[in-house]
Amino acid sequence: MNSIIENKKGILHFDGCNTLELVEKYGTPLYVMSETEIVNRFNQLKECFINKYPNTRVAYASKAFCTLAIYQICKREGMCIDVVSGGELYTAIKAGYPPEKIEFNGNNKLRAEIELAVEYGIGRIIVDGLQELSIIEDVCKEKNKKVKILYRITPGVKSSSHDYIVTGKKDSKFGIPLDEDVIMKHIKDAIDSEWVEFLGFHYHVGSQLFDNESHLKATRIILELIKQVKGKFDYDIKEINLGGGFGVKYTDEVRKPYAYFIEPMMEMINDFYNELGVVPPSVVIEPGRSIVAEAGISLYTIGSIKEIRDVRKYVSVDGGMPDNIRPALYQAEYDGVVANKVDEEKNDKVTICGKCCESGDILITDIKITKTAKAGDIFAIFSTGAYGYSMASTYNGNPIPAVVLVKDGDSELIVKGQSYEDMIGNQLMAKKLI
Image (cartoon, rainbow, N blue to C red; front, side, top):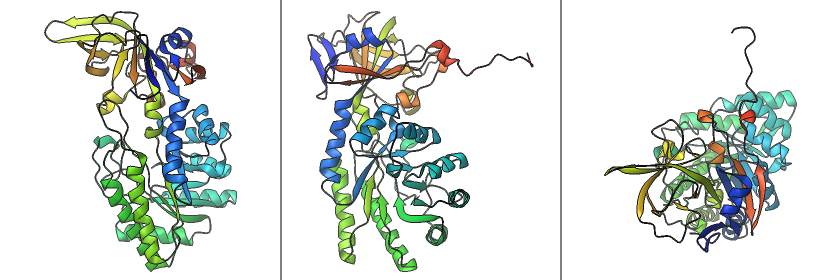
């Protein structure tokens, strides 16, 4: 357990808060986010990156957890943010986020989304497709505004992770391939454009990575591309974005410090520019999961328990795949505990399942918990701060749970849980066709 998770007299506490009291106040299912842990991760990034190397920035990849409150924290801590949709950008605007600190990623940005980005004057658009530049130019011309861009390249490196979250290989929907006849023409178009300022390149090799090899390979490739651009167009790259993907602890993984990834990449970049005798460009990283995953837990109430002799024991909770789709989607593994019986011996192997009408609605397979677990007990799942709330749905008519922010024993509601009325609020009774 990390430092914000404590056992006090057999009851799970999270960032100083008694989880049973949180349940009593806010109900279940419930997402709980620790401000302390989020700020701790930002402080680690400041120490090993921002404060250590000049002209560097951290852009929180907010697809991991996007709310007004997380943007408030990012803004206070001096971070930039990365958004991937008009909805995330709109949330940032509503949070009063400084536009110059926003970058916009995504492989198929809609024209309306680009219009919103240009109108708001965001800091960067990460161009991800070959048709995107012309749309951006058209929007900028229409609005008489100029925007800064980077090209997201596909470095063609394979990372060790689930195939759904490996994004740097050549066969990927993300990024522009490095075939010379493809990439160089589009770089020239960006350099020559009167409506965009071409800053440089971005890559992202994948997520939940514990080995820095793919990051280093991609960095070598991007530096070679920079050398080619200088030789071919006499153009100096102003910014390099190294992406994110740093792995976190879900069960028994050993989390690597940020410096394990960052230091060798920065050493490579600095050596490259020292040989050229010029100052390195701005360098950006985009961590998301690694900031918020371990900052979150999910709390559930245990309901039905079904034991199949010599086969399996199912312990059902009042949530499931609507509030955490990752086990069904990625075969993601989690750890958890009966929050009101932390002290009791864990000697009963069970499977924690959700309440949906889906056989795949399994949250944790074969976890050991106390034999005394019963209906009404509270079950906590750890490390659900990333892609829990942000991927939540109302499948099977289950309302999206509330989100609570906790810090040093205090709690505050930052996302209201849906009521049934909220859930069907946009639905209409047919008046003409039925």
